[in-house]
Length: 234
Image: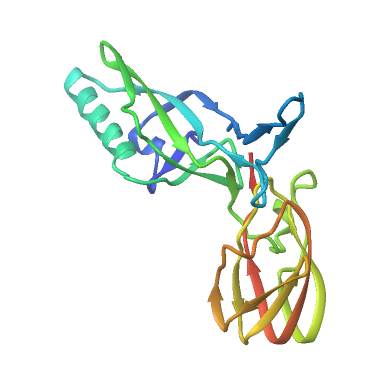
């Protein structure tokens, strides 16, 4: 029987014989930047002025049953679990078995709650997470078995350029993305009338991003260029 739970910091909750009894996947709140027009009821929303709506962090809460044969062993197991989830000092990958194909970037900031009754215990762990769940697969993959008609977009992200090509990159998520670009030769990308210079090798720029939806681009150069990014969903 497969025990569903989470994988965090390279270990699965079943490694500690934990049984998941409850999970709450909190949703992030939008960060709104508004200004009221003086002497009127109109409000201007500047939240997306730099390319996309910003969101606050989200909370992921998991409650597990902990069981052992005596109080000493129960205390040892509790200690092992707490050290497992609290060891990291930054957000790292968390995989929830109930959300296949995606992962979170999360960290435990507050100490877990633990309640004990004889040789049984219950531990509740709150993770502070990056606002979005991130696809395990890069965009442009051709794995048909995992394709989701509601959430996925079939697209090409690898191009052989001989002069000029016009194409479109699709950001199927809800957050602006900054792709890693790999190019075998210097090239130029034109997007929304702005020209971006791409060097040989691997690069990434905070100036070049993909907005949600369609992103028409023109690529000028000679060689191979590929874009590497993963969609991010709430």
